[in-house]
Amino acid sequence: QVQLVESGGGLVQAGGSLRLSCAASGTILRISAMGWYRQAPGKQRELVATIISGGRINYADLVKGRFTISRDNAKNLVWLQMNSLKPEDTAVYYCNALVTTGGQSSVWGQGTQVTVSS
Figure: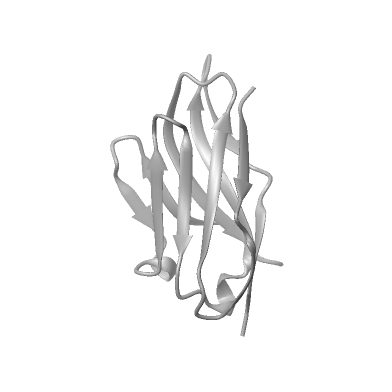
């Protein structure tokens, strides 16, 4: 069984920064991609950023230039550096990984709350 554990959320003022971390553990043959999604109250979960094993990165337009995703493939870690935070970035942030164990599956973390005050 594969688990993802996020950390690093919290309360920050607008314009501030936070760094989220996510660690994957369990019986893992390969992680094809890791990423971050977020869900604000009353809204659908949306993509924030993803990074595949080869290094290709995709950002949502709303966070381009402010957020940076990075990954340690050997240690199954992924980070999200969030700068110039805005109140509209307030959401629960979820880590996601596309994991190959026996088959391939999409695994989610439990989420970490990010609150940006104005």
